[in-house]
Amino acid sequence: MFAIAVFWIFQVINGLTALGMFLQPQKFHESTFKDPEHVYRELGFSEVAVEMLHNVLRGQGAALLAITITVFYLGAESRASFLLIALTCGLSLSAHVFTARHHLGSEEVMKALGGIQAMYVILILNATVLLGAAVAFFQLAS
Image 1 (tube, rainbow, N blue to C red):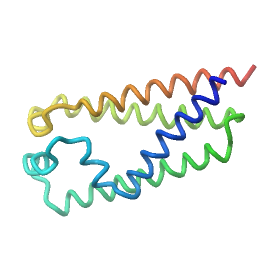
Image 2: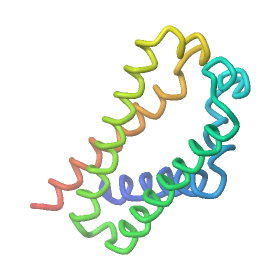
Image 3: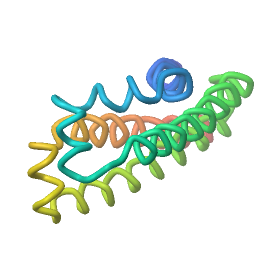
Image 4: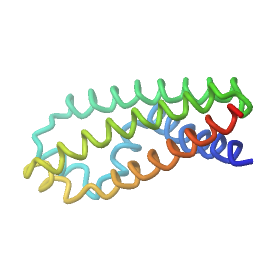
């Protein structure tokens, strides 16, 4: 029962995130800022740079969507699903920790952003699902 809950929590969160990043990367990204235009202006992003950033996010969304589809194909009975979930969440957690450290270490970035509260939510979600997937992975071994 626990494994099924972890499976579907990942599928819903990762699936919706992937779709948002793939279909509407600008809207998805800018939803994490109070004033996106202010952030871009303060950090010196041109319109082309913003568009390039959002195209990178679209590519990341495509990769996450592939993972969601693969996990669905493997199913909640497969240990491989939970290994893939744990790897995805663990790598995402690591990437977001590096990004948070960079942001927190840059006075210019923090002034532009005003805070990284949205990133803390992402860190907590990734860590929680990572732990759940690891537990499910080992439970299925027995």
